[in-house]
Amino acid sequence: MRTFASSPSLAKELESGSAWGETSSSKYEDDISLTSNERPEIGRTRKIIRFFTSLHPYFKLLVLMLLAIADALYLFGFLEKFKAYEGLARQVEDAHSVDPTTNSQANTVLYVMRALIDYKKNLWMTVGAMSVCVATSAYSILLQHNKTTSQLVVFAVAFVDFFSFLCIPVLLLTRLIVASHLHMHIPSALLAAQNLVNPTQFMNELKCSITTREALPLCSSEMIGSILPIKILEFLLVVCVLAAAYLALAQVIMWCIRHFFPPSTKFAQPPASTNSLIPPTPSQIKARELYNALPLINSV
Image 1 (tube, rainbow, N blue to C red):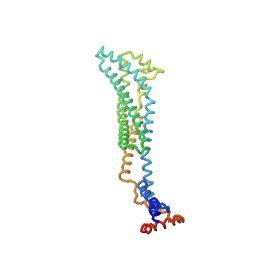
Image 2: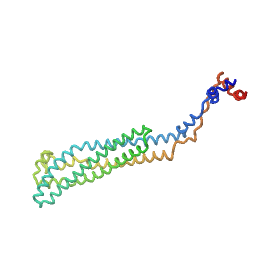
Image 3: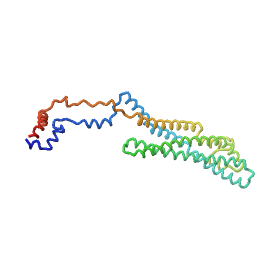
Image 4: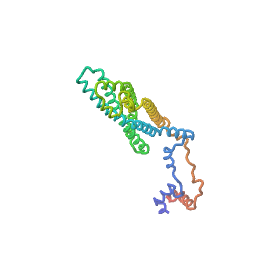
């Protein structure tokens, strides 16, 4: 009897209750913090809000695709017209250096040239901001499925992503102002250039005419047509502003959900024990009897 009672492995097994199939409730207690036991209506509302706020990177990619398509449709035509007008402005600049009396007309031509340079710089800066925004958006989508990433990395990527996207409406507003000035001054600049130099090379490159001729389009219309239209720029600007507001609102809502409305566990109830529904087996009954007899055995 002493030998039986002195068996540490059997005594430990009996004391733990594993001999008759009892299970510990610690697993359930550990899982309470991982399980959201909210009222059904609260859980559904939370899921709907999180679904709409989680769509912001995809919506941003859609806006960026729209911007890329609009710029690509007018990019190559603008670069061709820019190159032709750059040669014409160089001729005017050389003629102005020889004859300073043409100051007012030359300034009009050179002013349009500087505006075209600003438009071109703005175009490439917009493309750069879009590229950064696409890269950070794709990386943010990957981070959503990676729970081991440091919060500092997530915050840095989100900051760069939002800042780069916020630069796009600012650049579009600047381009809208420059495009408005170009629409007003291009016709007068071409007429001034025709009075100062021979614009034959410029007209041959663009296959147009500065003055009205049959079967040839106006060079001013060709150049204005290569610039993104004012209406499209205004539309893209409004879309970008609304997208930026949606992104900021989505981040605020997600932050408020995490900090002010965490998953509640006050409605959690421990699961009903299944051991009371299953009758014990003969071996479990014998093990329980032996466990109850342990104090008597040790006292012998």
